[in-house]
Amino acid sequence: MRKNTLLTNLLAWGFLFMLPLVVEGRERVSGWCEQGGNTITTGGLTSVESVQESFASCTVTVYDVGTLDLASIFSDDSGTVKSNPFTASSTGFWFFLADDARYDLRFSGGGISTPFTIGDILLNDTKNDVTTIVSVASSATPTFDASLGTIFTNTLTANVTSSTISNPVTGQRIT
Image (cartoon, rainbow, N blue to C red; front, side, top):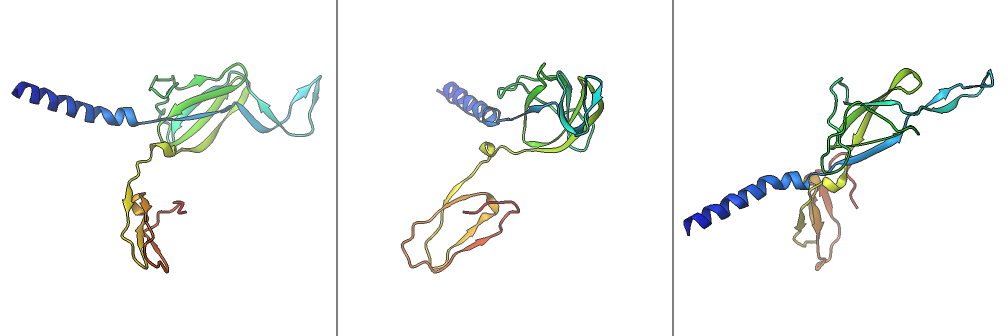
């Protein structure tokens, strides 16, 4: 009997330690190797107007924002590691998946004469947010603490004259 209890406890704890790995999601980022403000030459003539130029098979390097540290990137949501840097497709299309954070993307090769960086790309996939639903006691002036990212429910059974939202977080949407 004691063996079964010990085994059950070990399995339960093992499941709890694996749970964050299962729950963690990644966000997909994609785009094209392109840069505006370029001139092109066709038939020996250089364009007068600036154009958005595409670069097939360019090299994309993903850095942790503000550093030269290569970011961990993936080719799918299950965590298959993608090489960094990597080569975009022959059409110039590129993609990767990464954990929520900020990244810098550097584009080079594939006809790009001067490498360029697009900085501070924010990945913030809200499907990874953990929220709690709280029932607030009904009163004529309920107070909702928004600092915890909590979802509130309130059944109006009294004559509510006003409500207060305390501790709002910058950038938080309250509806």
